[in-house]
Length: 589
Image (cartoon, rainbow, N blue to C red; front, side):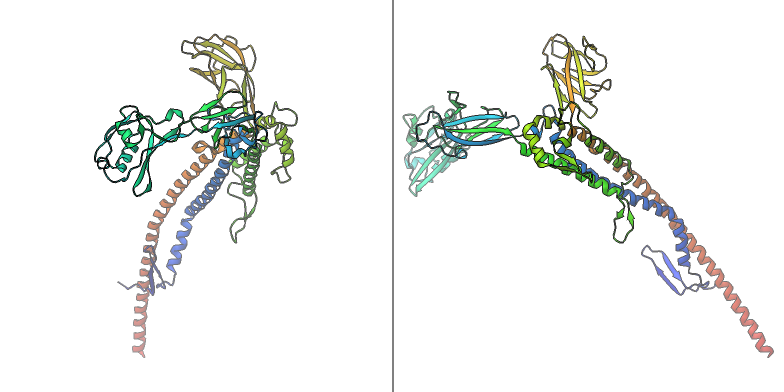
């Protein structure tokens, strides 16, 4: 066989033989690569599609982050119902001042309010003014023993009586070998409601100090039972406390000049005024602290500002995606990955519809954002007229609240709205209940938009009833409205309970954002999942193509090598013939 003339050979990083300078003069490697590149174009197209999908996935991720933050802000403004209601409009703030009581002696000087008590208020607190006079602080009972000359010598050696002692009903055995330190440790592990400590005045003077864990007269330290040991230790004298450092006492306050003592065991009092917690710091009879509770308008205003900022951030993202600009260094101008995506287009359109609309049922001057000082500028971004918003919040907070919130009222106190979803339409509904059974469960009920249409409360498919609860179905606009009827056992039927529903702007926007961004069921996550699945399929196709092309490359290379061998053989034969001819010519000469 004729040898193959290969002047340059090498191996690629993948182990593929690369060569050039063969007998034919053809750059076989370039030829194979060119053929393979043409055959691989479908895979390149798939890879380009995967890259484009990844850009979309990244953009959807950004959109999800923006809408999630927007949703959190809207949640504070939208007016939830039920047990988990949390509205910024219910936020309260308190202010305190101090003054002498009406009965204070002439010349009495009141200390500062914050040195007497601290006040914290929850959303349950009612707007108004209260006064609190701190007459006496609660304190923990505290007593001591007589002096011990050593805290490490056993009690028997020191001459003390040992045996059983009872502290607040807990029995503690005092052994002859116990030291003062041992006794302290036994008391602290006895769950007797006291804390024992040792105060060392000197190396030969030590005291055992008991402090009740709770304040108040009911937490007084009690040594009921035999007193031989406690008398010996100097804790009692004939069973009575011998050395009292602080008496067990209750807190006493006067509230709103009612003329009665309000007595509590703790200096933290949270059950006198709804939604108000008092922390007592010092007693000062004849001084009253004035507590003014107001709506926290600053929190409301900040939430409106957060709403505006979040809306504008979402609009910035949408406009960025839809604008043509240079997005990579040295690249051409191009639109964002979601520029022509239906999801982004739908969000943008529905945002505009809600923001620009008026809320039905609102009084004049409070039916749209612009009327409370939140306006749209020439760039279609929201901005706040601080003075106008302040004025509206100060004069008509409830109307501003209704502009943003979901609200529902009922004409019968036995009916409460416990929840709702995006399907519920604003309007007035009439609920009729057939009655309740012996367990208080609703026997039948219906709801509609026409008074008198459901008299008798017969089931007509408009409500799904379960116990005391009923949920509106798609039969009416109350679809998804959750109701509870607390009529008690064997209640008679009731007709035409009026339920009025209003849906403010924050509520509507929350439903919109929730539709697109809610977990794995939202449109955004569904799009991401679909793109990810598509990429997996495309990647499988790329792998399949590359697998086939490796076989094709090997086959092409083998065929080119065979061709080169044939050419080499032909060239060798030609050279032989030429040599013979040349030899004959030389002989003839």
